[in-house]
Length: 90
Image (cartoon, rainbow, N blue to C red; front, side, top):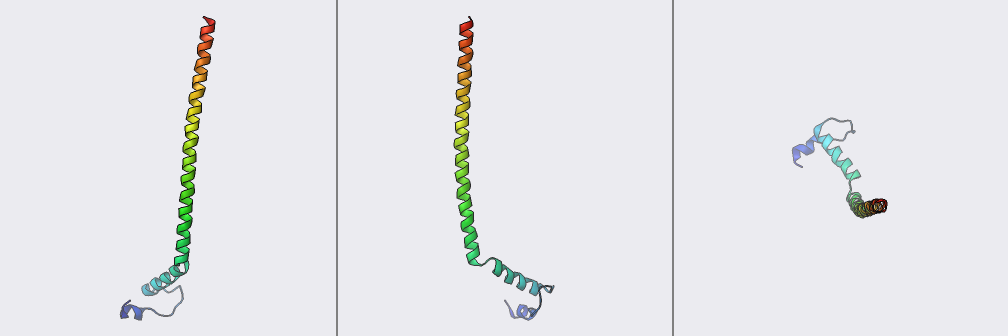
């Protein structure tokens, strides 16, 4: 930060509307909320959630494949029953 900007900073409350103070207060609060440990913990949590989502996506894909196979089997059984009824009635 240059000397002119340092001159702009002064001790004040968070209601000060001077641009340099707003920026300084913003940066100060950002440090409180986004320290490196917090960011690292959030990144780990996001990665864990992404892995969990991937597991669920895979489970849904397997479920869908099972449903398709079951529907195909049902259609085959229905067709064979229809054929048997038709052959028995002829």
